[in-house]
Image (cartoon, rainbow, N blue to C red; front, side, top):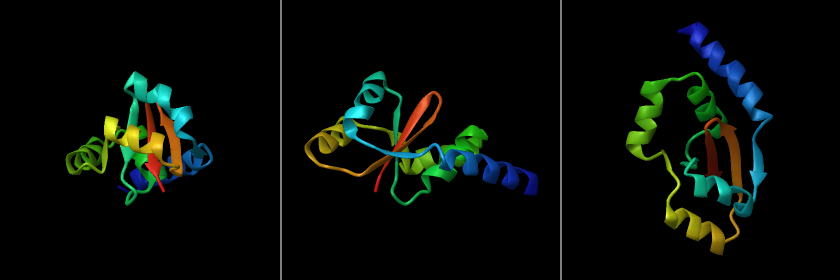
Length: 101
């Protein structure tokens, strides 16, 4: 288990440098393609991405089950169009993960 934890930490360290604040207009095309996933503000975006890359299916399935990770909805998009959200995003192909701060 320690080896898996070290693997996650190394992936997270790399992903941290690939995470950026982004505007909704830059994310719209990913939403239109159906590859935008919303991450709950209570989760660590970088750690979640690392678990996805590491293919930790049971952890990802648990987040999907609780709704902490989910496909971005039309309601999310409408809210981000009309508001001025602070959005953080990262690419974990084929997905684009987004989290409102």
